[in-house]
Image (cartoon, rainbow, N blue to C red; front, side, top):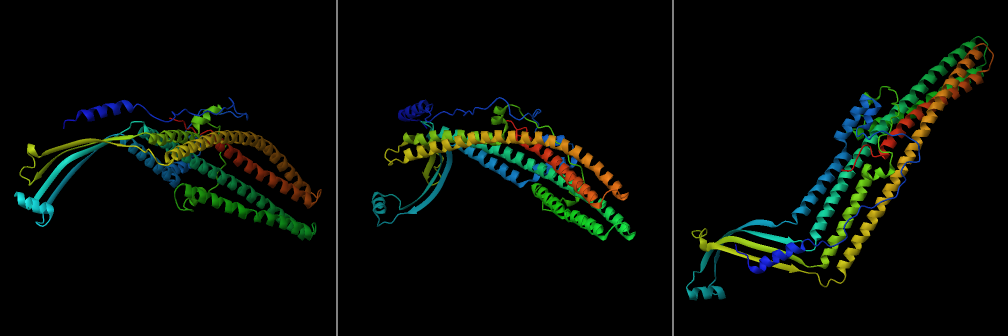
Length: 470
């Protein structure tokens, strides 16, 4: 097909104008942050498999199953596929569209219609068969960059979806590790309470013997029985909490609640707190926190959509063409005389729309302002997460060290009170008080150890869990 000079000139002009892209060019927003964190906690180099530092094979298997089967992660992956498809579609919109056409038509004109009567008078056949095959193409020229801005917005949205998936992955893995640590903490507390119950029952047996010998009064036996029953009653909430954490882990692994009870019920020690992995520079949060990266990508997408909206102020140019074959009957369909071709250009321009474009541009600018505020808020909340996690981790270490000393001291006092009671030097109340103090301190120690380990997980999560913007 030979293009006319007008079409050639139009195509050349469109090529020149396509370099003109309306709207503001994107510049990454900045947030002023201090060079270091206020809380004095050491960190190590970022590691995307940070949970393996707990050196717990069962925990590693749990996280592997979470990554493979968790439904929130699967949904986030599906959102990436949607965003990737939208990005491909935005790129395809800038290219020509080519399609094949074909038709076969059979007609018989009425001799009483104007066309049929005229054809009959001129000797043309009353009926005919028309066959057509060919290809047609259309192309919207991106004169002022509206399609380019849409493509930029789609790719920025894809980046946001990718970062969102990383954020969901980090959140779900951290939640699974946190649930595991809570489970081990509850099991440790249950073990302490069960051991204390055995001690209380031994004391009850001793007092019952002394009552039979006339050495102790019945009120001492009743008092010791009441204390033992109180410890026994405290076991039920701990068992319920353990079952709840096991069910929580099952759901995170994408299985029915209760499935992993056999594997998780056996007692195991609380894993020691790990050293957080990440960067000690707060400014790195903008590239290391996937939720912050996602927020920044949404700002870029909103910025590009301003240009897409502004492009409607300007005319839209499209080119179209057709090359094919048409013939009455099939015998001459593929002959040279059956070739038909056409080409043209179309222009549309929203000149008077009563302020609709102005409203669309204003809306796009408002969405960018909103996205920018949310981005800056996400950065500030990220620093809050890090500082809070560091403080909890630092203070948790101190608490564990002090409680370990307290439990050692109270254990010695308990043994001394038991010995003194058996020799008649002290009353039963002193033994029970020593028992109660030791139980409370031991319970707090197990809680503190679990909280310290959980604080280290929170610190890793706050630092981005080894994620880095590509």
